[in-house]
Image (cartoon, rainbow, N blue to C red; front, side, top):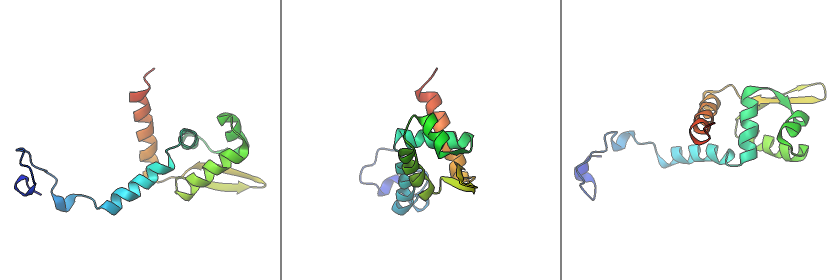
Length: 119
């Protein structure tokens, strides 16, 4: 898209070109990922699971939340593909999925915390 095609010519040019702009569906997909992390507790659980593998009981203790509440958050994160689980006997352990999306989300969270919450 060139500036001559826009309703208002402000002298700027949209340099990426309209053909390179992601579609609305792509933005919806990304928004859905962010919606899964829109709860502070869920965001903290995801952050924790980026750093370690844990069971629900330990996560409940770390989060100071009930096990059912933590399980609810884990279900949302798991359905979004952000965490994975493995069973060892009666215990189920959770950790962040080893994907580019999860690594990038973790790095983004860390960077935003660094900017927003300076020590």
